[in-house]
Length: 617
Ligand code: ADP
Ligand code: ZN
Image 1 (cartoon, rainbow, N blue to C red):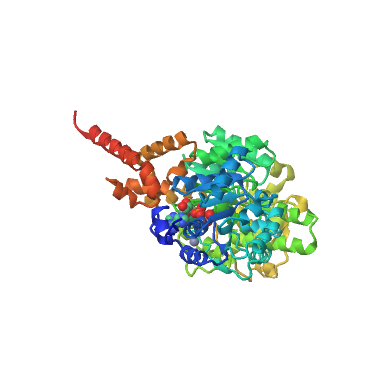
Image 2 (cartoon, rainbow, N blue to C red):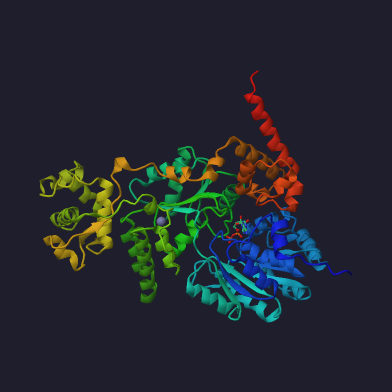
């Protein structure tokens, strides 16, 4: 039998996947694995992990075996690979007996380039023995952090994957994850016996994501303002509790959005259908608890919004990382307020974790607060948390875009502290703000607080600014919020407190701009992007309609046919022949043959029509 010649990585990248260049450390990783090396790969979500094993699988003899924890994810990957002309199949509990038998036949007659397996299936009786008879190009262990008991997605079956090192000693093993924290990293290396393998650590920066943080005010209205700038976009809204998810989802629906709810309290079928709609249709908004997430590899999620504080900065980074995997501009938006903090602290204190674990959890919360109180640039704080440094401010976060510089707030801070004192340390920021602004509320009338000396003395700031000031005083320990008494504020124990009260110390803080000057959410987010300007063009819509039809005919998600990014490039470059179309990123040989003629035809039809409508009749 003739030995087939194996292609070079660059050739596969170009001809199969239609990409011009490797991204970040991809090239080095691919070369290392093609040469037979094992490795642990840490790359942010959307960084391009899949190619790191898909290309070596095609460049080495035998089948590449990919272990993946989620069926939906496997199905998507298999479908996308088949569209690119790669012989791929999956084995998992969703396959019929007939499909399973056909996959094994293909595998045993060397007809498969890539096989996706759930860990359960890999470890089920007989599978390893059968695989041991076959030439295996490599093992890729996706979402490798599932092996870590420390992390958040622990899967007991992952622990048994160490068997691969023993049984397939000569086969390269590649573990991949987007979780960067050093402790998880070491646990993966130890448990998967990868101590000898190389470590590839990509930058965790996601420059196309714009981080926008807002002081929580009326979060429902703030969210609607954000969504108004994202009509027709797919997005995720994270909320803390199931009841909040249900309520927000109803409100978004009432406001005319195509929103679906997702949380662990919903029936399995309801959850599956929400996930399916999100994946297959464009412009669906999922309102979810953190139960929604792993395995969402939809490339065109344009925004991820947090209406409550996430659990930690790691969780935040992973959740927001689901935005903009396609590299196009995307927004990570979060509304935060001091009101969340006492409750979060109490959750930690009331849990039955041991004291050292509680300290860690409080530390995680502190890191999160440091992010919300970042002095200069969100991205700098984020990246430094992951051990990277960004030398200059990023230019693509709320602080960089709207650098209202720190101002002297000494007088306002003293008024705030007086209000706390005059109200006997029994009230939270909302009431104290009412008092300072001289509001006429039932509570103030009932308590007679309009007679206090501090009543109405705070006209220089608006409500949002007072709330921000109180929040920052708490963060600096000048005030302390008592979770037992609904966030009632009392003096904190910072040493500067007395000096500040006596007027011997000055305080500088950054406050949000006054309300009437605030810009509408996200206006700049759109205008700044050439690519997204193109996204509004009728031609793009026309091509998306064509794509939807192609996807519908085959029963696959639209992005499996072509990514938005590819269609945007078609709009910008207007290819006039197959050769020009083939130059566009994301158009490999198989897709060029399958869709090229139809896509060109659709393009020409649109142009002819546009021309016709411009002719005088
Ligand atoms: P991850 O698994 O790391 O989250 P993926 O492997 O899904 O990321 O890749 C994210 C996106 O980037 C995909 O749409 C993929 O097609 C695209 N991509 C990956 N590598 C390249 C590259 N070298 N050139 C262009 N696009 C790429
Ligand atoms: Zn910045």
